[in-house]
Image (cartoon, rainbow, N blue to C red; front, side, top):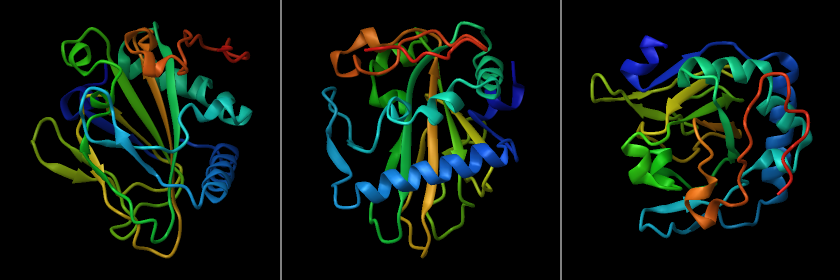
Length: 224
């Protein structure tokens, strides 16, 4: 168990990404955003009546093999098993989030579990999830840094993370970010792991991952 993570609801691992991880993820995420430059990023409310959600690339590693390799790497297994405090871990979702200059979209305060598949069951502890955020560009006040609600202090703290850091927050942790007002992209790649197969809870999530995350043995992506 990681005491800092449990007390605060999030933690930052500084300078964790190798140069290969960092450069490859930067290239892939920017390539995806440039290919979808004319798409509307804001979707409709989820069926359970919460706020609108971002319609970027869910389950991104089904499209990019290299991302799946990183998503199921020993590095990420070790982080997930430490913070979830179990060796029974499931893949669920990974998501590319790129804010280009003047994209003009934000994320309102929310918890990731609040987007489903079942917010009530998550809040009651039936399952637990974590989101691991690969920081691909330095966060600044201008480019829409992530602000997280500290569970202990009940105040929002800004993550001034550097490229190569990994921020991890609990699925119940509230967080938000503003628009990118800088002149450069702000890229992250999010990887979600859970303690149960939660794709069975709502039909909207049937195409997400449901396979067990086994260290050193995730070469083949689950076929949907």
